Length: 379
Image (cartoon, rainbow, N blue to C red; front, side, top):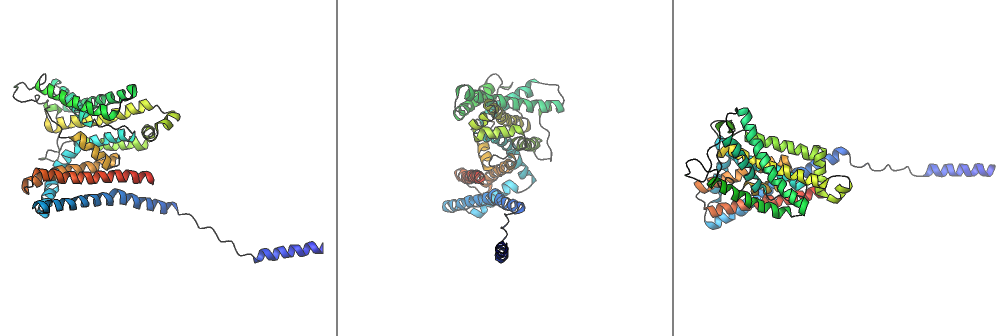
């Protein structure tokens, strides 16, 4: 017993002589992680695109100097052409309106890993459908005629997009090939209509008659040409953002885009999500065609689109296929378009140089878009 007592005392004294335990270092708090994430997002989404634009402008300045032009005067003209006054800024917004609509729709398709290159054709399909309503439907009040002509445009573009989706689902046809082919069909078909069955009554020009005045989009901020189509584009971008990132339907679309086989194993209908993504994407592009017709052109004619469908691809990629970011990238492209025209007019820069500068800036910001998307996936 005495021996056991001595052993217990020895163990007790040894225990008391051990160094105190060092508490483990706490992991970074949620607030610190959130703060770091916000900093990374700020650098990726704000500072990096600004740096990309500045780099493109620096290269453009060197090109202008080599050609014998003053870069300061040239860029001042570009700025004045985009943000000089209220009228010029509203022209930027007018050009940005179809880009925001098309880019937001393309973001849905791209998130589903469907490479819709056919927004140009879907734009034309929507413009044709809206023209039919605007010319042949009369007697409706504005509050009915305007929604009807916009719905017709969205329906026309959605059907054109769903055709490519059906070909992919039924025959496993590449959507890249089919959408490009459908672009040419829509453009050539429009040319046929405005030179044949739907040519204006006077038959002087390859264009249709003007749509009914009740179908024209109301304007605000007079005396500018800015119309409610810009507000429609903002609303569509917000709705598609909510759809993609806040709903189960959007989650399914994104899951199919990330890994179709895994999504199928989880019980998701791959074909239905592909069809839905292309319907939304084509519908947004067709709506852009209806907005352009009812807000600016008022009649259908050849080359009604200066390439909105193709610019929309760059707009979507720049914003990493985020509809809210597409609002800003669409306005940026609108500013480039308006500013480049003013640089050509007032600074007397040749059109070749203007297009080269515009192309450099677009190439730079699209390269940023690819980098941003890869960086976001690695986080």
